[in-house]
Amino acid sequence: MKVTNININILKEILHKMPEQKIQVKNKFPNFEKWINGDDYPTYNQLVELSKIFHIPFGYFFLEKLPERKYPIPHYRTAQNEDFNPSNKLLETIFFAQKIQEWAKDILLDWGQEKLPFCGKYKDNYDIARVIEELKKIFEIEHNWASNKSTWTEVLNYLIEKAEDKGIFVIRNGVVGNNTRRKLNVDEFRGFVLYDEIAPVVFINNNDAISAKIFTLIHEVVHILIGQSASFDLRNLQSANNEIEQFCDKCTAEFLVPEKEIRNIHTQKKDLEELARHFKVSQIVILRRLLDTSLITQQEFYNQWKKLYKIENKTTQSSGGNFYHTIYNRLGKRFLYVLNNAVKNNTILFRDALRITNLSPKTYDNLLKSII
Image 1 (cartoon, one colour):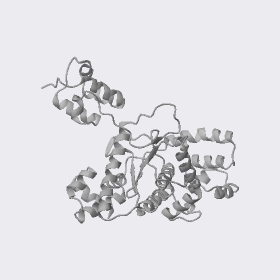
Image 2 (spheres, rainbow, N blue to C red):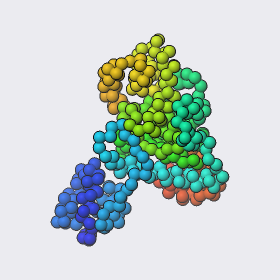
Image 3 (cartoon, one colour):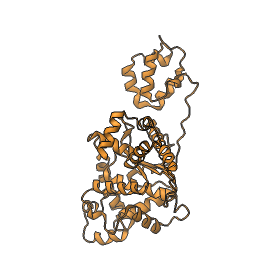
Image 4 (cartoon, rainbow, N blue to C red):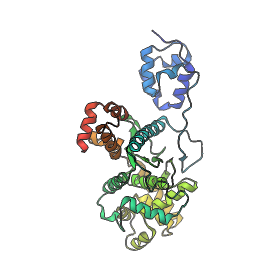
């Protein structure tokens, strides 16, 4: 039986907001054009399928207008030539991270968790030197620490482990939830941070280059230190024209590539690749630090940046690998630890844990066995 009381304008509005689904919809439903023209109507089952494709509740097709989905946090863009219209992929990713944060906070408060000492500690004191010292405490690093690590991956994993040990929830994902067909766009955002004194959450776009993820992670932790939620694109690893972003950017750059150290090393190593390997950051970060410290000219920066940008754009992470390791990254070690202990001590029910993670009982049990 066909459903004739749907709002045709809703179909048009959804398609306008999600143009990337147009080909899939038209291939699956040859009569879709007739639906939006009012010449034909979908069946109930077809509407159910359509709601899954568009990732909206079934009832939306009968509303007068689509509910406005407000962007919940500030978004800082390097280039601000037009209005920011977040994709559904980004919105759903933030909403999922908020859900993780809410559950984690409720559990931690039930256990008597107090405010993390570094959260918002520098919200009234934008002092780069003090923030750098705080970062060193959080990540437990010493002088020349990065050069002692073998690979960028080793550095990233080390930094994430230390951040989580200190109480920060870290999530890495390159798709929406577990849907591998809905890839997150690095050009739209490299990451975001949801500030909270009890359960701060940082999200890293896993489609980015590993060295860029390191920059994003530190940038997000600085946001936690000054008590600010935000998402950002950090296009070409340049900050937006905003005081908060520029401060976070300067702290991150100085933490990863200290001015004094790069000045000393630059006298021995002129090659960008060598410097990048030493500091375990991208060559674009090195290039920018050389410009910041007046070791290269603006013209030298621009000439080399054009070449590096093309390389950086092609550097993405594979979606393959161990299934449980991927799920582990998408939920985060700290969150899984909190969730597992909450189930064990009856703070929440097992079915709640399955609902939060969107996992089956078997997958959930195997995931925990693989990481314990």
